[in-house]
Image (tube, rainbow, N blue to C red; front, side, top):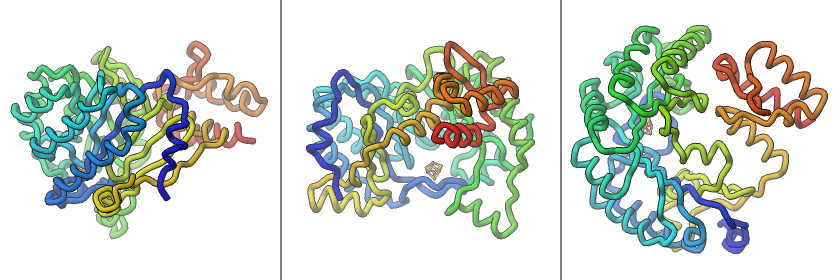
Length: 389
Ligand code: SF4
């Protein structure tokens, strides 16, 4: 079923802005921990780009109405696209009268960073590169199945640090078996010494349909224990704060003025449109998404000339409230205290959280502490169960 164009057109976008997420579903190979949607078939990049341009065209009725404030190319490995396809995509975006974004991010792998690629993206107005470093330790990169070496990562970081990019981010993974507190800190130190404006730190989790999951089932991979996980997260948190970074979401720290505006849109539940296979869209208060299939995406757009999206799901009041917990509560914006304290059971819960130091009260909001951040999944579950009673 397709999204109802008249329903979308009727949504009130008055006074709103839009974030544009573009999923680029190509990777050279599967990293051992990753369950994102991608294909290694680079031969389909051209067709994908044609389909993307068609999708932009079919969404013009929406895109021409709302100022586009942020753009985020995620993947997959967007940086793998050749320059000729970037030119086509940016030409199409620039043809929209509402296209005046203040932040354009491209996710990149170290092997794709060169002076020429940075120049190409800068010429198209890209303001931010988010690079998947994960670690500088060769043994840990091998466990993760990354295709770059520490040297390639360092060269890429040097290029970013010496470029005229307004901002950049490096992704780092912790809780990798064999990783020590010292080696994690060394990795972070390399990045902070290079002046990384933003860092995303993710704990390794084992998802189904990944190489690590299969290895774990065969007893050939043993995840790190919970205590070590917590110790690493808290040590990294302290290290980054001492280096002048501000924590602003469970996995994200930034120097002043470098928080990712596009991601804030997700967490504050502002409107965004997702293009490309597997991309999700949200306009208050409805959601829809494109199925995670490149074949479906190409067929719908190129053969049938229709949007590839699923049907629109209006959110109930309960779902909207749940989403607040799942998004905003994980950030330093926190959750209004009234969401808990207006009910007896909610108030009892907030008092327990405060006593344990899992949240702080800041200007009428409950905000996670670093200890609380480690427990966020279970705190969110408790809150949803309590407030939906
Ligand atoms: S981690 Fe990134 S580069 Fe690796 S397979 Fe997943 S999307 Fe591709």
